Length: 525
Image 1: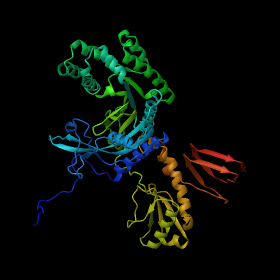
Image 2 (image 1 turned 45 degrees about the horizontal axis):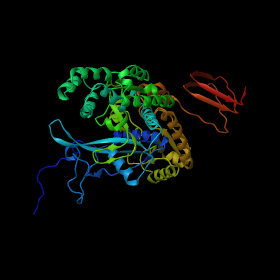
Image 3 (image 1 turned 120 degrees about the vertical axis):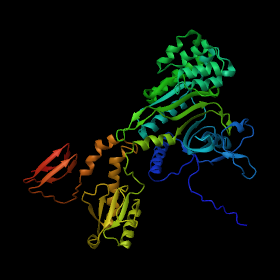
Image 4 (image 1 turned 30 degrees about the vertical axis):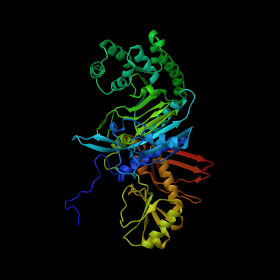
């Protein structure tokens, strides 16, 4: 019996998901590699866990969670990974790890309601960094914020703020305001909305939904509206009732040392002590933090990028996840890779070709020379250079260099190396046997010039010191003689180094602007 459905099927990614390819995946991979470099600098190892986890029957209320259960997994109840934190917790518990620094890049899945009111699975790329084990005071948390700062500075995301708060300080404030214990978790979620909505809405939620009195809500508002730096600690200590609260006093003492740690790590200029920052599970947490970008505009497009929360985390003595729970101290931060991607993508001018993973494209003038192109590619591969040859004879500008073969040059045993993005520049003729060595040096110099700016540079930064390189040619003379008679030499933004050289100039005119010349051990006539 033929059960084939006659209806047409349009191949597309499921709702809530996307394909990564082309320029998007180049940007994404550069983001991930930049972040991984920071994590490894701080001694972290990477892990990779499955995208689905077993459901833990000891955790109640899982039917109410927006987790995505799998219909059939050989009799095992399981679901798609809700949080990288759940996977990390399971991994640590399975191995009995007591001290570790690990990070993981992966996808999370949860059910959301789309614009049409339908429940769909949403897929999100996240990056999770965790420190497991007991540290002195809030030292692990201080290094965590240092890691966050290095990540964001490395990605050049623009201005940002690291908001911090201590759960013990907030608990002390709410106890002084006489909030019933059973209302603390729900109230924490309401307070956390102060930066995202109006105070009137927050006040209404406190009184109408939670049943707090007007006076209590007003008193809470006076406290949680405060934000600042170290000085806020001393302002809070002026309140005698607060100063006598046990939870508040413990939190304040920990924060004093914490600010000292941040000063040493150079993080304080980025930090804002925000009393409204919290989490519904704050009773099980210590320090809470989130990273928020500040609004900024893109000159090339005129687009304004609003403030975005791109990372958040906390320290806790026990992990209360949707799929796993554990009782060990852990400090974590989770980066929203897709939000970071959108910010960087918006800063890439329309039509700009991004660097691919390839360094060189081997081509032939007039076509043909297949065997010769294969030989050149082999030499480049032997030299560790990423190169390819295709049917196309005109490389896309995403390649750094083109290695050009022609009948004339092949007879001379040479090939020409040209910068793809600067077609007006004269190419460099090199021996075929030395093409790997010479091109390797050119690639190295190209990366040194462009690599300092990183993958997320703005158009203004590119124009500032990138355009002049397009007009600078390079001349090298090893053990040779360079004679110039009646020659007009113009050097714009050039650097000239002359070492143990004899220079003779007759009727030469030099027009030099912003030129650096170094002459060592030279003889001048």
